[in-house]
Image (tube, each protein chain N blue to C red):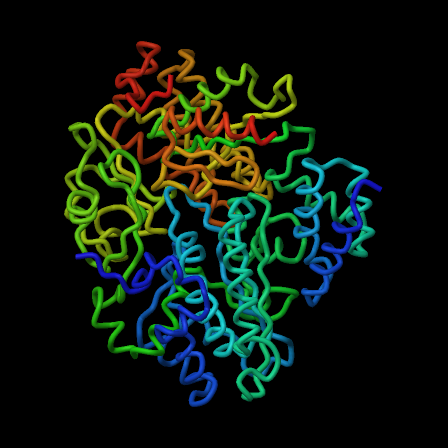
Length: 158
Length: 428
C-alpha cells in the first residue's frame, strides 16, 4: 500500500459528500497526488478500492487531467505560466532563468532531487504576471530578485 | 469611475470571516429569501435585474433558472463554475479568495430558486488557496445554521460541496464540467438536452459562473431596479475587468457596464508601460477577436464590443505594445488550444495540432506563402464543426491576427524572421 491510512480516510470522507461515489474520483486523485507527488498505474487500483469504483474509471480520469504528473518530479514542482498574459511579461525568459539557475532541463529533476521546472498554460494570474506555481503556492509579480529569494528559501526549507 | 459593488469589501482582510461578513449585512438576503420569498419571486427578481452570465456567453441568469422543470420528480442541482481558465481572466479567483461568503450566499439563493438541495462549486485544481477559502466559508456557514438541514427553521435543506478539478480548460464549458464532476474525463455533451433538463447525474442542473452568483444576494437586498440603474439597457450592472499585458497598472477593476475601454486602460491602468505605443487589445479573454487601438473608446458592454467586431467574453482585457510579434501571439494561443482540446471532436483535436504545426513551421523559417491560406482553411474546417465552443475559440486568434497583421506573417515567411521582435521583460 502506497496510500497512507490518512489518505484513505480522507478519500472515504470526500466520497461521503457526494450523492454518487464516482464523483469522488477527482478529489481522491488529488489526495493521492498530494501525498505521493505523481500518479502511476498501481496507484489507480488503490484509489479505486478506497472509493469503491473500478481502477479503469480512476485511470480514465487520471490520464485525462494534465495537472497530475504521471512520473516522478522534484520535491518542488515549479510550473511557469507561459500563456499570453504572462508571455507578454517575459515568462519565457523567466523559465530560461530558472532552468539556468537550477542547471536542469525542462521536465527533468535537479541532481539534488529538489526541483522540476515545467511550462504550463494559463493559471489565472494574468493581472499579476509573470508568475509561477510551486507545488500548491502561487508566486506572482515576479522579477529576478524575487525568484532568487524564493529559490533560496525553498532550498533552506528542504 | 470604478464602481465597487462586488468589490465593496475586497480590501478588508477580515472579509472572509463570517462574523465580518454578517456585520456588514451579509446573509440578510438569504434570511429574507427563506422567510419571506417563494422561489418564483426570486427568479422573477433576478430576471428583472437583467443579470447576464459573467463566464463568457452572457446568457440571462434568471432565464436559465426558469428552464428547470418544476414538476420533475428528480433531485435538482446548482453548480457554481469556478473553473476560471480563459487566458486573461482572473476575477472569480479574487472573489473566492477575498469575499467567499458573497459566493456562498449567492449559491444558496440560486439553489433555493431552482429547488436544489445540493450545490457544488467546481474550482480549477490549481486554485488551492481559493478552494481553501471557499471550504472555510462553507464550514462557517454550516456552523451558523445557514446551510444544512432545516435552515433557519424554513424546512429547506441545502448541502454545499467544494469540488476541485484537474487542470483542464475545457471543464469551464458547462457540460464538460458536469462530466468532470461525475468523475469522468472532462469531455463535452451534445445539447439538447440542456443541463437545466438533464445535467448532473442526468438531473435538472443550473451552472452559473462565480461572478454571476456573487451578484445575486446584492440584487435581492437592493432590488432589481437598483441593479438596472447601473450599466446599459441590455447589459445591466457592473463587471469585473481583468486588465493585463503592457499597461502601467494591471489589475482587476470593477466598472459599470458601458464604461469606455479607454477609461479602463488609460485612467485606471495608467496607459501603456515604458512609453511604448499600443498595438492591439484582446478585450474579453483569449477566445475573443483582437481589436486595434482605434477601438479603444468602445463602451465595455455586450452589444458595443460585439458591434466593434469582438466579444465582451470573460472580461479579460489583454493589452499589447508595439514591440509584440503577432505571429508569436497566434502561436502561443494555438499551443494553448491544442493542449486544451479534449480530443472528442476530430476537427478540433486534429485541427488545433495542424494549426500549431503550421505556425511552428513559419517561425522556424520553413514557412511557405501558401501556409497563410492553409491556416485559414484549417480555421474554416474547425469553426462550427465541433460539439462545444472550444473549436470556435481556437480559430479566433489565428483569423484575427491574419486579418489585422497579415504583413507580419508574410514577412516571417519571406525573411525567416519576425517583422517585429518581442521586447518583453527579461530575467537574464
